[in-house]
Image (tube, rainbow, N blue to C red; front, side, top):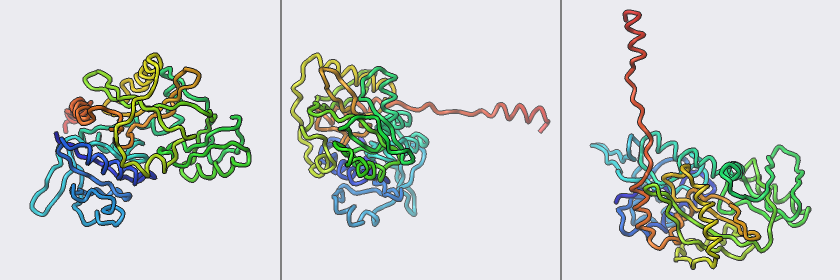
Length: 345
């Protein structure tokens, strides 16, 4: 099967996307892979597999490699005497803005390019943490209480200390702070507003257990990964998550009761619905007083959460063979013809 990995993008998670692509190169040995790099200026490059190294991007060497355009059905490498199409399924591995906010989805859908990843509506509801809260409320999944604060609002909060401040539209734990004393609030807000004009404030629950569950729908059936219990740190900061991100070894299955596991899968099912068709997503859950709470949705999880699946390559092939397709609109111009005939033109 042919998979074209699209990565990079113009976002604060640009480098994380590069790390994810390099990691998947080592994990997807049974596929025919091509690598499409999106620079921060939205120029597209075809990266040879031998060049899939961090230095290629940090040094700017990628700029010497072939550029790509996009046409109906595929990315294209144009040359003096013809062009080469990169047929196959695109794997959207652009984290953060561009990849998860609906920009890439819009582009690929506009050009009828088959792809693995969230569609536009799924992107909108998962990229903004405020909208994710509204989605939870709509489908009946519990989430922590919250406040939304914009950069233009007065910095007055009702949430009692301690609480967490995080940008509304950013992942990878970037810009997140735990505020334990009132004196820490101004700095925490300044940090978060560096990345977004809107922030989410949630109560900080000490000692909460956190779990990751990934999955996708194929042939109308939800396929679940193993469930992982994450680090006992207060929260996973950027360095903890990604400085050692090349470690993609299988995780130990969580020590979780069967009843809680059933609840977690049901919450995942309600969130996924039909909204995330075509996507492999990861949901991060809290367990508080034996109840399941959705923390956030990762519509394009780091390295596609390959470490949570026993047979990641087989599952990805299954998803790639069960993608939704957008109905093509055909136009007969019958209305215009009828007007023209009526006017005798």
